[in-house]
Length: 222
Image (cartoon, rainbow, N blue to C red; front, side, top):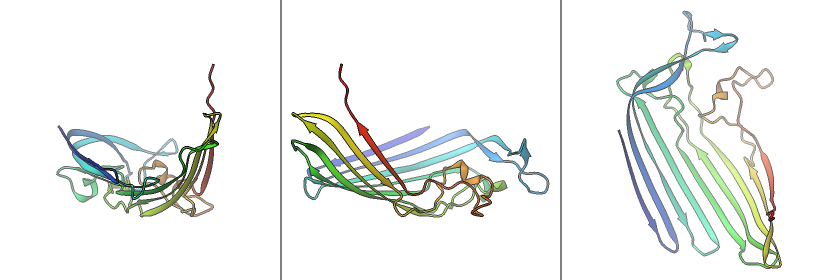
């Protein structure tokens, strides 16, 4: 069974939303790692071996969103999400369900530079922070999972519409992600448990470092 609850508020300067959920699931299916008699990973055809199992689970959490507009052109958006998922009547090593997302806080500050220009329209710049908290509630039996450290990512963006004779001719977007080139692993990444990299000496594949992207959209009519 499942319970969902939500509450929202909106005014000219502040809007917010709270959503909560609670799930009680019988025979929740998930996979866990197998080991041999010596406690080493069980290898099949060169790969680590996993087996599906099931158990009664309780999954609950929620999200809080707040959008602040101190002036019309400024948008300060914040959100926090949290999930707690446990397998009932289990010891600590198998208590927490695998691949439960870590608590996350996201803040994004956006400024509208040009809103109704003749050449440029909907022009904005933005800067954002994404902080993923440490996830130390994990399924540790047979080293199926390990704890994941916290990390913070700095992002920025720019976008605009290009106008001609009162019509949008193109849209341009530029995004910079992980500007500080932070080395991190997301707790939900299965590549976190890949073999040790012989070059870096670190276990698993890390997520993307500093990245820049450019997107050009041009409407076509027939």
